[in-house]
Image 1: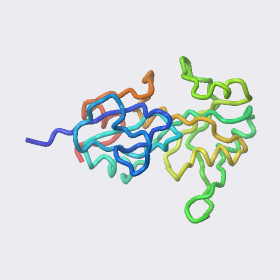
Image 2 (image 1 turned 135 degrees about the vertical axis):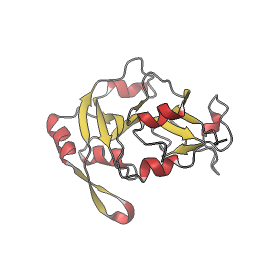
Image 3 (image 1 turned 90 degrees about the vertical axis):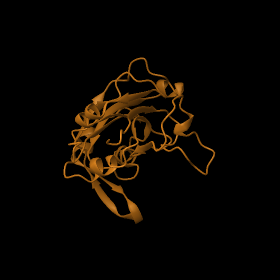
Image 4 (image 1 turned 30 degrees about the vertical axis):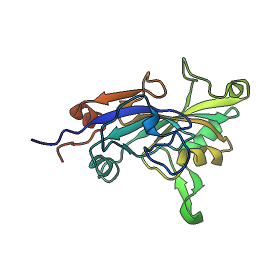
Amino acid sequence: MPEQFKYYIVYKPYNMVSQFVSPDAVRLLGDLDFEFPEGTHAIGRLDSNSEGLLILTTNKKVTKLLFEGKQAHERTYLVQVRNVITEERLEALKYGVDIEVKEGNVYRAKPVDAQMAGAPENFEQLFPHYHHVPHSWITITLTEGKFHQVRKMVKAIKHPCKRLIRVSIEDLLLGDMKPGEVRELEEADFFNKLNIDYQQ
């Protein structure tokens, strides 16, 4: 009988790392109010200061299928940036900006899309004082994933990141999920929404 794998999407909260084990005193995925089966691991990561959609599974093949396949997969982020962003700055972001990557090399980062956005509804204010200072919300969609890429991109247009939330990976959506919430998906639904041939 074929092995039965498990697939989950999680709203990773702010101030939690995307792993179950760490030598550091940090909040872990195991601190979520959910009993994950043995062998569950995260696909891709969100750093501690970022939040939103995270994939967990017991299927070790998903990482290769998602990140090493011929087809690039889109990931969309909702970003709160400091100060009111102008259309000119947004256009500059769409055109592509230079960011520093590994070992000081410069990389031209170009999003698939970047748009103005409204503040999320029914949204928990982690830092209430941010609401009272000039800021903007934008969405950025990428198919590449350099280290801290979104944060570096908005900093390059002089709008430092204040909050970063991944809201989708292909057709997997964060939707109305709340921080810390876990949802299990059927295998076919999971791969269909990621636009991956899961019979590979």
